Every structure is written in structure tokens, then in C-alpha cells.
Length: 384
Image 1 (cartoon, rainbow, N blue to C red):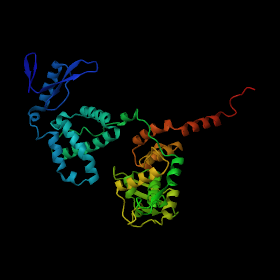
Image 2 (tube, rainbow, N blue to C red; image 1 turned 30 degrees about the vertical axis):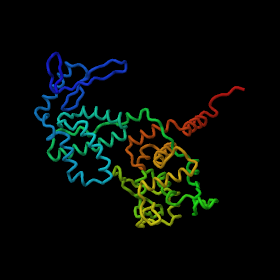
Image 3 (cartoon, helix red, strand yellow; image 1 turned 90 degrees about the horizontal axis):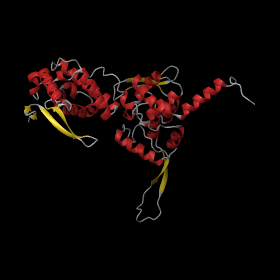
Image 4 (cartoon, rainbow, N blue to C red; image 1 turned 90 degrees about the vertical axis):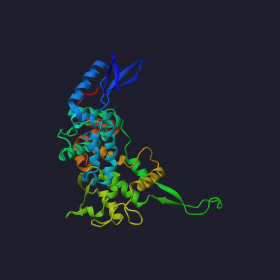
């Protein structure tokens, strides 16, 4: 349907009337085929629409063949996409659907580097920095595939996108684990029913249960290796090697990013592994069920939350262990580059996480004042 402007029909424009904050009604114009916003000035909207039509040419009117939506459909059916890990496909599927919804009718030449930069800002504002970064990884892979398979010659607008940290500027720091929380959690106990029908037996028969070894070990692995829960549950004893000095080392590939990290096993973690009779080189998951199988992430999450509820710890979860360990290291004056070597984050992301938390910790503030007292002791004259 064409929109009337000065008595003449303007094909390809869609007017949208919006109520502004002051109560006035204003008309904004959009290009129908590409859904691009053209502003509220009808004259400029007509001119911009003509530029788009000229740039895209007859390809623009071919809704499916050659459009970004067509490329996404072909990519989803390709061996490259089908060969991805199931977890990656599950993560990327909504990203690709969102791209189709937003720009599926566009031909690739409309999506310039400048448009990619604006697109990044939109994603950060709507989904946050982390999700926007993951989406750009997905879209960059899609575009490279399209170039390699001859579906477009337009350079990839999703590579080298720059910083994604805008969304972290006003991010509120979440709680982190402290020594008192760790002690309270690991010493948690709970009462467990040992049988009997409570409708028949008036007295409740229970026994006190202490934290099981699988929950305790997973907790220590999360805190001392700075890895995600999914990677903790995939850790196996055969990934541990022993140096001549007797020190244990572990090597793993992170499931989410594919990053390979290798690190020595913390002495308290090694002591716990030895207590549970877990030896380097064994073909077994470090954290396993009573039947000797690996834990499903959801099932273990429920078990962890059960014990979290049994303790006096509130407002924390397993995911917080990762950032907690990073903050602890930074408070001990360990630089971000060293912390990134253990956590597997990029330097930029590591620093962004630390920027959110470090400036807000009482421990660092106290350490700063203690340092000033040491430096200035005996330097400033005092008055009697």
C-alpha cells in the first residue's frame, strides 16, 4: 500500500503514527522492503528511500533469493552449521531467527560496516554486552560462510566490531562469595526423612545429612579453576597430569568458547581429590553420580540449589563462584592478564568484570588505607 504525500502516492513507504511523551502524535516513515527507519520528515524519507532503491536495484524486490534471509536458510541447511555442537546450535538458533526478523528482506549490500556498528549498539541496549558479543560471533561465522560459498561478495560487517563494554558502564555489581559464605555453605547440614507415613506416624523420623562429596567437589572446582558449571561437570581425571615435582596440572577446552586453558591444581583442590580417592589419569568424571556417570547440568543445578537453601547463604549461586575467584585474585594484586590465563576470558572482558567489582569492595578500600598508613607513618609531624 502506498502512502499519500502532497496528494501523490509514495510506493514503498510505511507511515507509523506514534504518541510522544508530551502527548503529541508524530508520524515516522519506514522503508517497507528493508524495514529501515527513514525518520519523521517525509521529504527526507522519500529521498532516503530512493537511495535505498538505487543501491539495491531489482534485487530488493526479490524477497527471498539473494536476501539475508535466504542466506540464513541456506546456512542452517549446510554441513558447516549441522556439524556444530548441539549446545552451539541451540544457542545460535534464536540469534539467526532474530537476524531474519530484523533484516531478512535486505540484500547483503545494504548491510554496511556502518550499519553493523549501529546494529551492535541496538543489540547491546536490548540484550546486554555478553549476548551482543555472542550474536556477533554467530553472524560473523554466517557471513564468512556466505562469502566462501559465493552468496555475497560484500565484506563481513560483523568482524572486528570493537568494544562491547557500553552495556557494562552502569552495571550493578552482583554479590560475590566471601570466606564466611564459603564456610557456611561447606558446613551445611540438613534433616532427611528416613521413612514412615507422616499421616500414621506422629513422630517424624529423620537423620542429619552432611554435604555430599559431589557437591563439595564441584564447588571447589568452580572456585579454584574459575570455570563455568558446564565445564566443571565435563572435567575428567584423565585430563590431570603429574609433574616430576609432584604438582598436578589440568588441561581443558571450554565448551562455550573453545578456549584451551591449562593450569596447576590448587593445593586445597588436590587435597580434596585425593580424599575422594580420585587419581590422575583415571577414566572418570571428577564430579559424578552414585552410579558413576557424569551429571546433567540441570540435575546438578537442582541439587546445588537444595544445599544452598540448606545453608545460611543467600543471594549467591554457582555462577558467582567464577567472578568471586577473579575478584579475590585482583584484591591480592594479581593483574588482569594473569587472571585471564586461568579463567579463559579475553583481557578486555576480564578487565571489564573487574572494573565492575573491584572499585566497590571494602577489602580494597581497607587495603588502600592500610598502605597509606604504612607509607606516611613517621613522615607527617604531629601536634601534642
